[in-house]
Length: 156
Image (cartoon, rainbow, N blue to C red; front, side):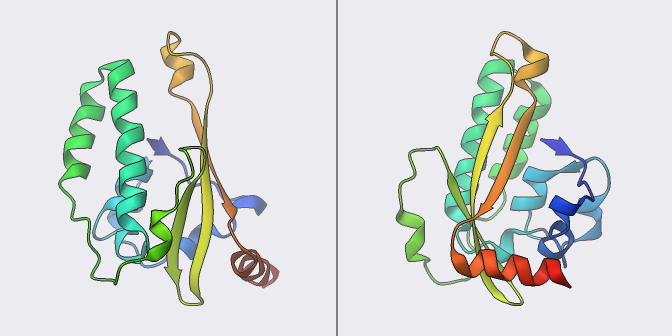
């Protein structure tokens, strides 16, 4: 749940994607769930907020079920209280079923909506709490428009 936003060649787009969020949400350690769902974070710019929120909260509930971690339970309670509407019209692409393997993340940027597929890899086993808490979430361009926009941004 907590991460360090790494500045590396592969993550050069992160500052562009998180531009405009409340600076208090970026103080280390950054909680990426809070950053995503907080009304002063990315939530107002997520085109498929209801779907993305459901994905994150479901994943968090699973972690709580395995670990019984009270801190995570408090985080779930906090995040569940955030509003789920952004005032945007319904996004028809949110009804697609990806069988939980990949989850779309659609973010509104100055250049239009960028669409990513998100997939999470969890390392370790459920009985190895230390390793089961290590998860890597990867975002891949979901369409040619997004891939081309990222190439343009990275070439600057």
